[in-house]
Length: 106
Image (cartoon, rainbow, N blue to C red; front, side, top):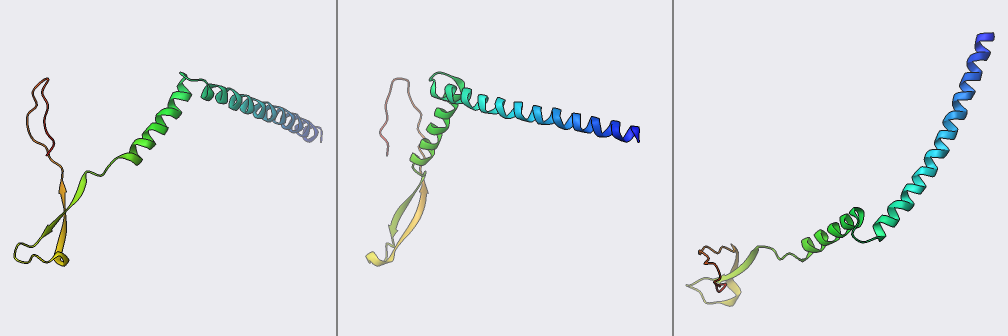
């Protein structure tokens, strides 16, 4: 019986320690969120830059024009506008560039 009482006492002691540690952990998590908020609001810090990079990447993906542009072709034997077909043509530019030069986009 003494051993059972001893084990119950130790169990209650461990429960109390776990409760204290859980409350300390909750306090540390809230403090961490506060510090992270400060870092996010301060420019030129890593978390603020990460947020800015993600925002710019999202803006870039939304603003990109698709590479495949539809090109309308009509049949050469029939000039009817109702029988036009649409095919996808990929943009290809294959010409060598000279340093300091320019080119005209076809």
